[in-house]
Image (cartoon, rainbow, N blue to C red; front, side, top):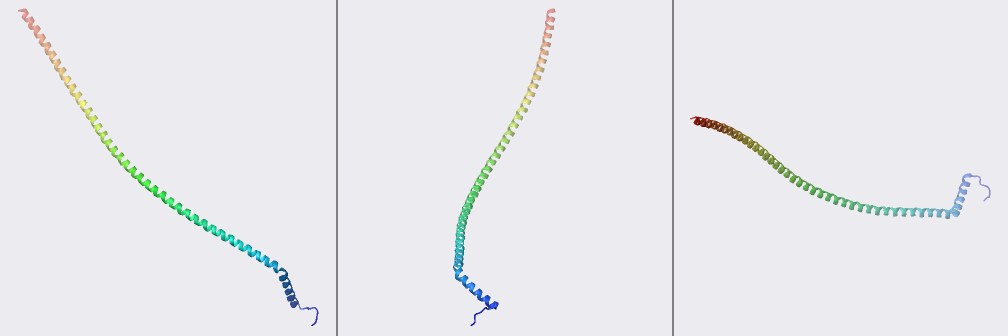
Length: 167
């Protein structure tokens, strides 16, 4: 074999590349494996943290679902209580309105009867006044007639007394 300079570029490049890769693997293999190991540990740590956050999120979701169910139950209770209250209030209001309506009708009837009696009394009073005035007029007429008759009788007596006295 001859020792000399190989001028074939392809052969020398492949040989040089093989030597460089071998040296890099021999010397840099530990560095590269430690970098890959650190990267793997970092990825595993991030995956574990993500898994832990996922589990916490699931727990929070379950807690939120529980709170939602409790809130829905409470809302249903409040709605039912409101409906019962509204129903009883409506019933009470209806009975109050009915009672007030009956009282109003009764008051109307009483007011009508009072007005009717008031008018009757007024007309009766007016009738009595007319009758009394008529009676007073008749009595006065009679009295004036009696007074006139009495005067006539007195005059006739006086004439008779004069006539008897002259005899």
